[in-house]
Structures are given as structure tokens and as C-alpha cells.
Amino acid sequence: MVNYIFSGAAFLLYFLFIFSASAQHSETDTARDEKPVQRLSEEQKIDQLLQYISNMQGATFIRNGSDHSPKDAAKHLRSKFRKHAAKIKTAHDFIDHLATKSSMSGDLYKVRMADGTIVETYKLLNLELQRIEGQFSP
Image 1: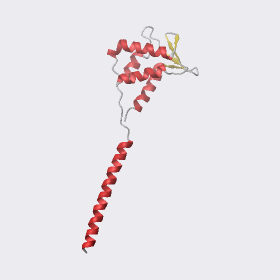
Image 2: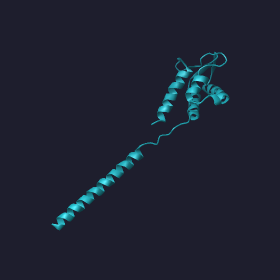
Image 3: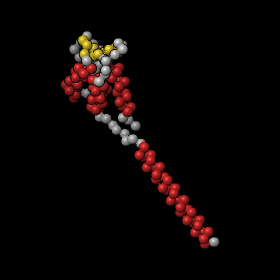
Image 4: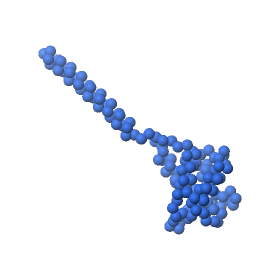
């Protein structure tokens, strides 16, 4: 009978050890599988928007009736941002106050896409900002 009690106690200890190790292992796997959430500052988001503009293949930016390359458009918007950075707190502010229309004429900035369609720049940037924020949030 003593052997039976010892065997039962040994089995119980073995079971608890295996269960505990299994629980720790699954917690470790879960923690390892989850990617750390990276948060971008508003300035980093704006920088990504400017990179997005600069890298638009086959697009032409229309500002005050003139055509501009994506790199020139990004350079212009970066210049506006530097000039008005104290007033711009968020990437949404950047789009709404600097990247939507000309401060000289009031005309909306537009983009002629590679397929010929013309879209207001603020619409493209708002979509890109949603993608950026979705990529870097929990």
C-alpha cells in the first residue's frame, strides 16, 4: 500500500510539473509570437507621408495649374512643413493645413495618376495615413 501511495503522489507531482511547464511554454510562445507594437510620432507619420509622395511612380502633382514631379511635390510640402511646424501638431493637421491646397491661390492640390485619373492630394494622403496608423497600432 505504501508503494501505491508513493506512486500516486509521484504521479501527481509529475502531472503538476508537466502542466506547469506546459503553461509556461505556451505563455512564452504567445509572447514570442506577438510582435511588439511600434508607435510612430506625428512627425514620423508626416515623414512617411512625404516619402509616399516622393516615391509615387508615374504620378504628376498639379499645383497652381502647373505639373510637378513627385519628388518636387514632396520637397515643396516638406518646405511648407518646416515653415509652419510650430502650428502643425499631428499628421492630420499636416494634411488639412499644408497638403490640401495652395496657400497662394486656394486651389486644391491634385495628383494625376499613372492611368490618367486625377485625385485630390488630401484624399490620397488620408488613405495613406490610415494605412500607416493601422500598420503601427495594436
